[in-house]
Length: 121
Image (tube, rainbow, N blue to C red):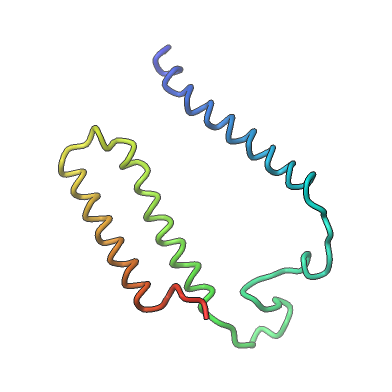
């Protein structure tokens, strides 16, 4: 039982400091900055156009494409954290399978870049 509690102690300390740091940063942003609100700041914003206009207006799909590509690559990169945590404990198959995953991820990113999906015009 003592081993389990000391094993999770570092995680609990990390969570505690993360919460404290988040609260301090949030409070400092309200204390240090001047809070001037106007109609533009409090209005709803989505994709660069007013959401209260006619629904049949044309809009640029580029915003959604960049958002979806960000989510895809962000989720794929999140697979790196468990792999790095056990990197010294896995066998060569685990290492090379993740290596090939990173190669495929890099090829996909280069393809996306070459097609111009990341350019915002």
